[in-house]
Amino acid sequence: MTRHYNSETARLLGVIADEANKLPVSDRRDFLRKGVAMAGTAIAAATASGGALASNLPPNIPASNRSLGPGVVTNPYGQPSRFEGDVVRRTVPWLTANKISSISFSPLQELSGIITPNGLVFERYHAGVPTIDPSEHRLMIHGLVERPIVLTMDELMRFPSTSLIRFIECPANGGMEWRGAQMEALQFTHGMLSCCEWTGVPLSTLLQEVGAKPQGKWVLAEGADGAAMSRSIPIEKALDDTLVVFAQNGEALRPEQGYPVRLLNPGWEGNTSIKWLRRIEVGDKPWFHREETSKYTDLMPDGKARKFTWVQETNSVITSPCPEKPLRGRGRYELEGLAWSGRGRIKRVDVSFDGGVSWQQARLKGLVLPKALTRFSFEWSWKGNPALLQSRAIDETDYVQPTLTQLRQVRGVESIYHKNAIHTWKLAADGTVTNVQID
Image 1 (tube, rainbow, N blue to C red):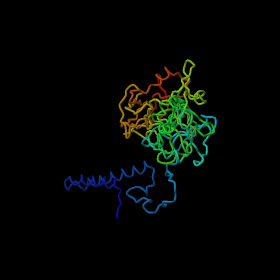
Image 2: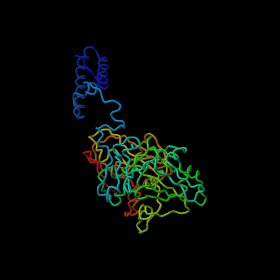
Image 3: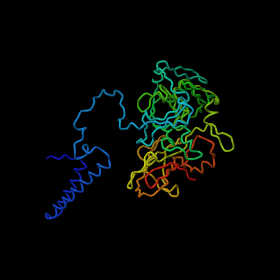
Image 4: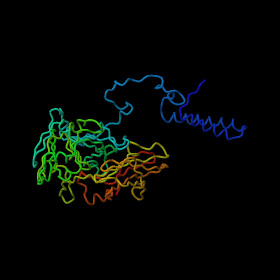
């Protein structure tokens, strides 16, 4: 009978044979018999723990080796495997009044690297998603300019473009946690956060084209949705790194992300990155529209509200383990997480297993870009002990992510925006993880 082994089985048997060859001839047979038995036990254990169909596991030939798959035109637009069907955006029904003014959350716990796939980028609407024909859409730039202009999408895309990998985050991310821990999953505590490669025309290029006047100190961006969402933006930001975006992760914007054109203000509150952009007006003062007076202001302990708090402060969270990713028994693990800062690059991330009593430096993995998600990791051996897991990020300006107590001392508990305090997961002896808060 011919046996077929996969590479790992062949490697294991090869090691046994090599070791046997080092022994006297009289001892080899007994060593080989015991070694092969151990290898068989290891394979059987792997089969049992994996829960897979035994006939598809080594040393057997899997069913996929014995048949042909569908052809290249079966899915003209590619889809994830059906075995990844639970990796989706999710909502919290009680969080908003209705679906047209609502939020969906990115499944951060399921993602690898720093790029969020287009179909998993969090959603935030104020009046639902408009259906816009790009051939009928126009971008108007006017106000304190020498040459007002109305651009078609084709005309806009003729300007020189650039691409940037940047995060985008709703300022209310984590906002339900100000008074206490109440969200049961990472997806809901931090999921109003995504990171993409954005392609578009620098707003500075367009302002140069229209000849923005010296007295123009502010820019108003307005969307074509039912809410006519708008925000006032200082001219310094507009001339710095603001993009007029038409593509996301290599393809046209998705409708829920502002198709056919949106604004992107890297590192700033996501609501300033106006979607379905239809108008840019240059003026000499802010407009104080609805979304920068009644909304997106931060109520302080003295009853006054901070306004124009654009920058998303340095933040981090452990993504594995987390409530959706418990530990499956004792052993070696790679703790992983994400850090980000609207101020620039992440310089360092520390992790704690005892609720912040002691800290150890984590490793930054892969790309470390300004105003982008940065992945960090820490290799550790879990012995089954309960733990309080935390991460603390420091950016290149030396801003240190605050504790919950430090943040509340300054901001109180009445706000829902800009909660960037150190987050705590409670790891139990059985490997389960829950959301808790400690002083």
